[in-house]
Length: 271
Image (cartoon, rainbow, N blue to C red; front, side, top):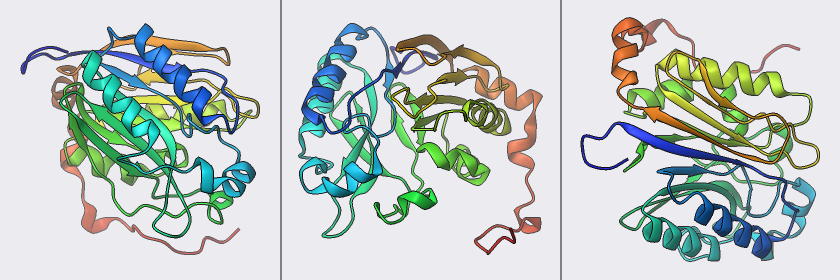
């Protein structure tokens, strides 16, 4: 994506089996893939790509696997790659906590030295003993578009995507570790979150053992632009950001909500 008025974004979505606990090896693999796809504007990796996703390992080895979000080896690596190749990188990693539990986080590195971290705010029940939750739903302007970062289970909450879309997000980036036999959740939720808000959505899911792959890229009408099965693959496609305002003229729902009528919040649900 070149120039202030450019609207086309070349994306690469990584779906690759990676070992659990081999952070150094996984960083080397990340660097190699970015080099191979350096013609992209945006490269998205799955949740916990650097460490692999295994809650027992992440809990037991957090002292040596967790990293600082600005000075850790992954932060330094992706910032350097982003600046060298003038592209934006989104990757899942284990972020060192503030004296307590670590965070399930994303690093977003963009040209110009921008480096942001997003901490998963809505944890899956099994993650609650392992991770601390984040407390923000940011949108992150990059040369590849305004990103709305989410992680895995968070695609189950439509209000997250709407909050980010109303704040200006153009592309929902959703690195995930969705389990085997749950492919339908990726397709249904990714397509719905995109169409609900007339934005692009990128689901980058793990295909390592126990996970279902099925990464995809969806346009503002909810149409699939590119999709994977369970294989190792890097999906490539082009996003035309001008389709967002065009679709919102056709489907103006985002600006017509009635939040005064909605029941939002936390309460116990009867089983």
